[in-house]
Image (cartoon, rainbow, N blue to C red):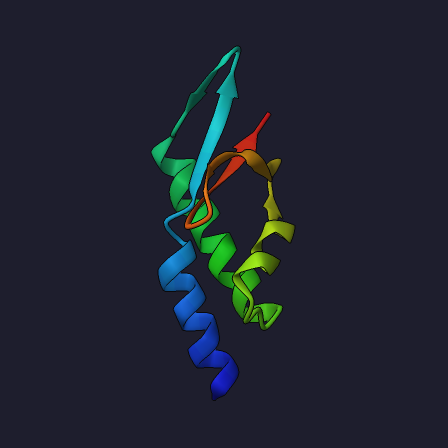
Length: 81
């Protein structure tokens, strides 16, 4: 039960992540990708029993990878090249 509660807290705090697609020099948020990426991130958190928000940086999905140079700690950016 403790793991589920910790995972729920991470989802609440970190699913404010920003999945963006790189188009040339620009980054664009695409609604379909944002929705599917958040769903995959939720699945990743639950399946891996993540309780430490920093462990979320290991998440990747369909080419989206964590980009530490962008965003803020509570709004991590995951970029698809």
